[in-house]
Length: 201
Image (cartoon, rainbow, N blue to C red):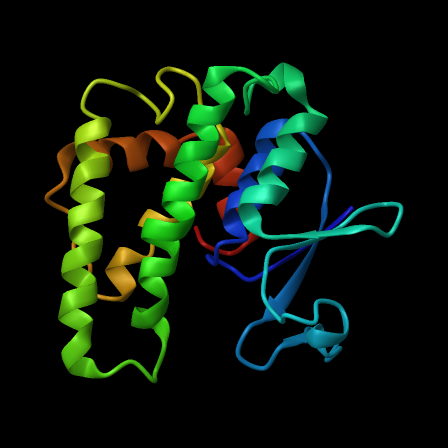
């Protein structure tokens, strides 16, 4: 299968999950400013929405949206326990985290990366994000990962999104539990491999 990505973007999350699951993916880098691939192919001809991640399966079917892609990848390697079985409360808790990260954190960052956002509005966005991350920090007080002792797809997503704060003025350095968590996740061999492959180490 092929995973279209941009270094450090939200596509890092499924890249990490693929590494954790031991699933081989051909990585194809897309430039999100020019919307082209390295060979100058127009990325819109591949994904009409023009963003990553975008997964192309071996049979030609495609999946977009990171939280869906990570579920698909996790279900291809159930023995890795990256997502609890269908019907279990643990799975719904992990999906709850995926939705929270996607709507409250990921999309919260979007205006800060947009050149069209008025400068005087950015402090309001930054404050809101810091409040959300402060709550996440509290949830991590007595657990290694979001779901407890087991690394899951939700951790790949949170690790990716939390890494954006330093680029847009959201200072997370005072959140001790979150910082320890980011180090813990970042030291996982699969995470290191994904970061290295994207040129982020």
